Image 1: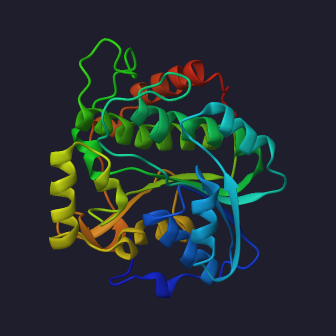
Image 2: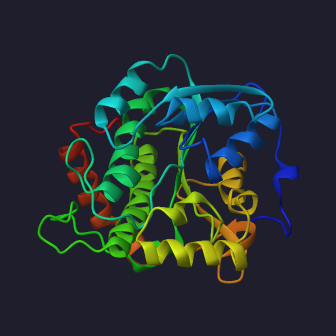
Image 3: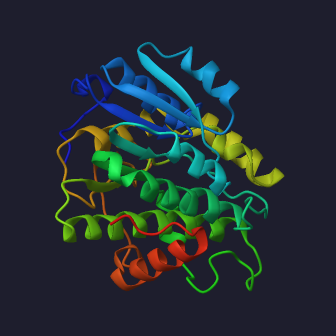
Length: 293
């Protein structure tokens, strides 16, 4: 558990540590990068659009680098991994899209499961032999409304629905976290797999859905959402505190929508070890990336 009121001001010194953050050019990822660089970490912004990443990097004080990574294209994921030399202390699987209209990745995956889960699954396994401390994967309170269909992850036999597809991808993030940590423990590794969620934070995620959801998102951002700075606290806590593997961190106040970070619970589905193992196997098959552990 966190102590009451934990904030970015409580971050421990990160000098000498390297942190890779996906989707770090805006929103939660940018705040996470900025705060970790502030306390001495070498931070790598892994972003789809390098120019936007470079703009973001100029707003950060500290040791910051920008590298191209498009999670919706496994060739880009492989290029990123192949181009990495040296250890990574922390990988933060932060990037994500939310409730977008139906679309497909470069390899034909449904866009949300492809970006939010399969891209990060491939990236993590391709980098795992160089990760020394932990992997932090972002989920969402919307995992509670998700159902992972391992026979139809890509919505080829179901009628596509944007919010259930998002819920499936965020539930997949938690199942991935659990199964990765189980495999690491079985292998005798000291690397940990953890998850975090931001609660309800004002970011650009709320601007890429249907016209109605975009309007509602803008209203929510202006009225009830916490700031991106508040939403990034669970990620920062999970990335820097001495927590056991498979810990899930979220905001501690108002039904986990805001507040200081603390260890939070998850649904029964998110703890289903059999589904987690099936999802891992299907993810290996779909991505062509074998398990690294």
